[in-house]
Length: 317
Image 1: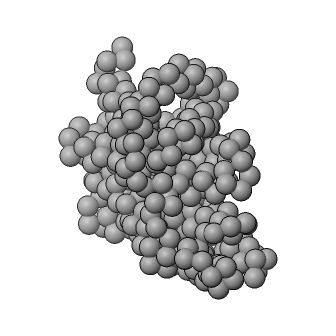
Image 2: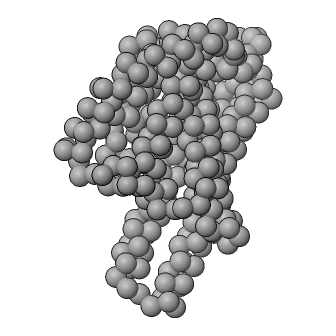
């Protein structure tokens, strides 16, 4: 069963990410046409084609790929329970690692798919608030799905994801001290990245800096210090790092989970994001609760958000 599960999931992921890459290339080409000064009718035609392409990508590729990944996860859990007669799906051996990877992949696919559906819907109903609402709702939807799958389909307690309040105050205090201690290295890596890779502001950063609405900025702040850290810590530390640590050791778990965490971020942020991923994994390892990396992640994102607002208001000189 194990080779079949791996083959099915690998095929589904290859199709999904291949389609996403094709869609990204089409969007880049369309953006170039729009920047070249297309007339209003041509702009409307291009935007309609992009919306239709996103809908097709979601319905024909992402949703089936998510279904395959979910079926493989639940099927693996059922096989483990039958073989081991255990109460939980993630019991021993390779199954904890593979099961956690499958669930983490499903979470990321659900994140991108929910973001795509929200983008299509909000583009038609509330386009000016599209980006902050996607940043807030997509992680929340994906996290709720993951928790539901853990509890109902896999019969796995949420404590297995590190979601408990044991020594919560001490863990959060420890994470704040770690944030302060690692800050010089983080900003040194940011400066080094700007030398190695030409800096390119993300669209979200540009919109935050130029948008004057406090509701817009407030929703973005809630997303970057709440929904995003919670979702990413459950996926990359609660699922992936925990399984890698148990199977392959702390060192491998820290490095591999940090590399995977880095891979879902823009290339110009790879160095500081990898460093952050290492710090987050260590925070979880030494405290035993996800509250520590969640707090560290939230403070990191909050500081970056405040610096963006400060620079856009002229505080940067």
